[in-house]
Picture 1 (cartoon, rainbow, N blue to C red):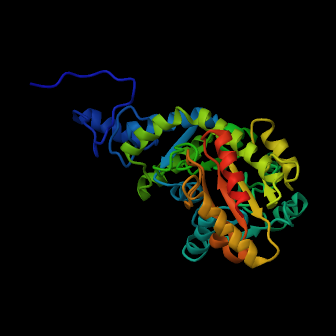
Picture 2 (picture 1 turned 45 degrees about the horizontal axis):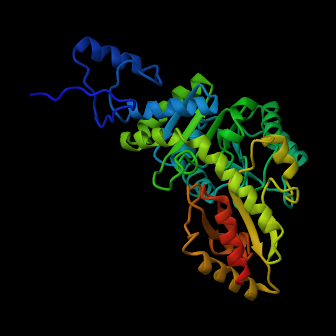
Length: 390
């Protein structure tokens, strides 16, 4: 006897590799429609092409981003590959300009894949001190005329916050397409597509999923032609999120705004606490007036929040003392705030800067806190207690 169908408020999990098409006319129509690369097809064909669970989660992100289309991938790096590859053509790729203060994995992708394997002409644009010069940026656009510009809204780990709208506007005046990695700001604080970006990407592993137990990336945009190219590239390269992970992500997205609001509230409280503590030499948080790019943060993010990452430097008379105190701080907090090499988790986690970035940021007392959604007072108390033991 067949089991009765059960209704649910959730999208059922479709683990099918290929989908039932029923008859020859339906199959012919499905494959004919596939030539137009529909985002949500009338008939699903094969899960590497599109899957109902993946599309359901994508539609939630489209609403969050105010986007015409969103495509999920199995990781943030896969999303970066899709976003960049749609602009690569055999003869007319042109130069691509990347801001230097971007995710280390992206910089490695530039070196190992874009330059060494694909031979793309890459230009890198570095900040002057603690901020990017828009005058210098405009000059680079005029001189090199890049076809693509790629930047992050808030950098890791120094939290350089850019004037996103102006960066996009200048790129457009010079005919460049713009990709924004908005992982740190999230669509809750800024929606780059509203300011003219062509593509916005996220490591959905971080705040969108938000629990440190799912890997995913997402690419979003408004241009229907870019959507077709991105769907086609994802299909042939195989950058598809699994239906099980998409099902879980769809549930996690329902609490995204609640979670990220608490992330930002806690981070601001911790930043203020650290700023006034005698054992702390420097605090980097875009919401503090002391941050070099606070004005940019106000302009781009308004009063919606300033993110959930706080970077701070423990005080010490020399390298050895700073390093010793950093290690001690991490040891004291290990049961409350563990050392985990990621960010965006619901639990607060930390990373020592110098141990990860080395010579780029040679600060032995500096720590990056990825602030979670725990009780604010308990978090602040734990951190103050650990500092007092130094």
